Length: 255
Image (cartoon, rainbow, N blue to C red):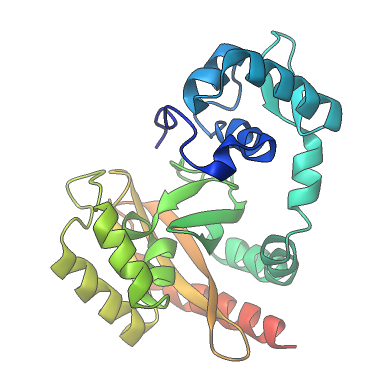
């Protein structure tokens, strides 16, 4: 899921001091959580002297840290601030007891997913010692068309986002990934009808994921909960527990 970042700042916002600082912070991902100064400059297009100055300012502010080898990594201050985001913190606080119940009922990977732009953002994950290893991580992202939680969110997001996803192209990760508009539209229609989706080997050839929506009191879908198991498992026995957890979180958000 990682790729070299864009070669150079391409907007007035990106050329500002704040914009360049955010480009540097956004250069980190799950595959490269530690980056050298030259890595950061190359990934963002920010000139090396500017990257040097901004990175040291970000270290002073706690947004970045230096590890024992001298490389940069995201600082704890950013985690502290990010935990205050209403969509992550408030939703997570309501959802966590139900996610824990769902994990106890399934002993499988349990994830809480929200929409961020045109990606699925994983804001919480519970896993056990015997859970299948996952591609992503808590705080990571996956494409909407290839992930169970992403498909649930896309199904309820409206036509504008679907048009954007289609325009961006449907990247193939395995032979079972949804890569045609017809199949994607049919899948989204089925999600709206049934309230659940099953994705077998869509993003990882070894895993199967099921997901259902979480709603506010108004009925608006604000998140999805997914359970990820081995690709050869039967998801039918997990769906009732998944939907019970989603209903519980939805009731909690309505209070």
